Length: 340
Image (cartoon, rainbow, N blue to C red; front, side, top):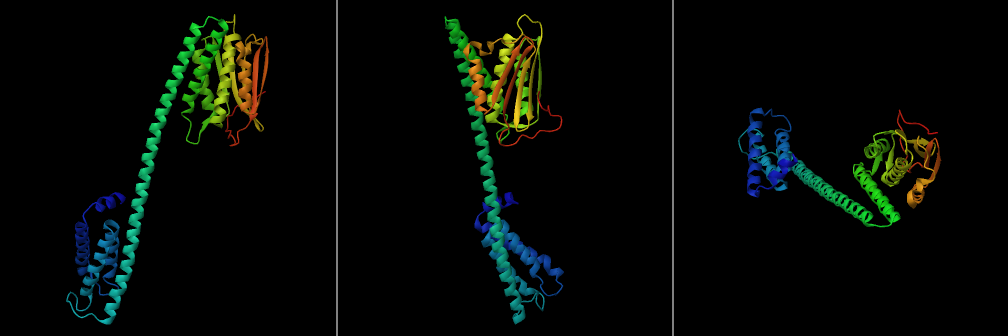
């Protein structure tokens, strides 16, 4: 209907007026053999005609339809089809019809304008959404390129540095940049509300970390199916990456195989992240040249939580305990449950 209205709106006024006259005359021809001489004939068909004409062609063609139909309706009074002086009652009926039809024309014209306005507004919203999507894709592409350039710069500085401590610092910075780049890519797939599914998010992170780990190290990943805002997902992902990276560096020396387990569960009003391994223990090397512990503590603080690390010959267990986000997580059946 809206497309038809917009199409006829581009017609010249003379063409729309001609269509209004033709439509009214067609209704007269249809009504003439069906005349029952009952009260109200032939006003019903003329009223519908005037409404549709105004809806399709506008208020002025609708007014023409009302005027022409009022004149033609006089031919349906006795004697049928013969112009004559209309009686007072006949004139009252025609006047009443004209008033009612004029109101229908005004209503149809308002409906017509409303439909067009709503259609145009919807098209504008779709166009703006498309432009925003394109701009967002461009920004994401530029951000990815910036991460790649910065990562390459850090690696180049690490190779050119003569001091091993400086080299290690640059390498750790490069790893952190690479991690943030991966997180950025994952979070680009968040829903429009800015939230990500914890199970899917940690599962994807495990897949990324597994791809970078030796084939002798296996991974286990469990998480409750809950939604996390991006403000929580980013530092949480960085904590997981830092703990797993330290485990890969220090836990499995002189070992042929190993296991790293990552789990996220809810315990009352808190979420609990567990990252553990069955290695030889980090033996204080979680600091990794000075960046590990301060970084982890800073991330835990940003989550308003606390980090507990228990490392020994049987392996390392790290717990990150932080409050459930303001928008409550919604655990479903099959969740990982409380962590112990």
